Image 1: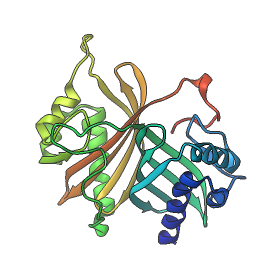
Image 2: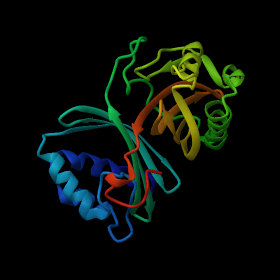
Image 3: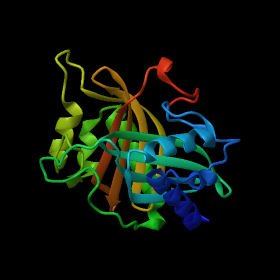
Length: 254
């Protein structure tokens, strides 16, 4: 079932390139809950979106694809009228997906360490440590990102962490600088406020969080790779959350 679901999502995302309406048959339009504020509810809205996007001669590259219970989640590259990087999350019931979340931003970089937003390790390992790794990231998000207990960084993060953020570079010291950088008001630029979801497969864990960048209501999707119980690599996307009057569905970003 896990492999088949991954294949169905792979076909769905590649359908953006062609606009093929059959690619959205994996979507149960009677139950589908859409959390992208810019997309209409249901399979018909998704089919219309794919048709419109296909007219721009888009390219879609699925860089990483994972599964966690009834969820399939992955990291993608999009080349539409502009280049973007995103994370896509789908919840399944049986052989159809019934719920979708995403977080997409403009592609930037490479960063000061020479890394793009999507390169790096793709192979899943440590399948027997999935739950342990999930809990490590839970602690990192709640204690470090939200509660700002930065003294815990070196216990959780490798000092040689590979960083794919276009705004930072490798190493735990650079991560600390990013997390503590302040505005003129004295408030930190990046503020994590709530952890909504943790999805994991083996040594990869995706954290879906809500907070603020400067004063903009923001969704943070952070993918971590662990090795021997420490974070050794990080990818992420940051997307501002549209104001309520711009939403095309009533389900909310999270």
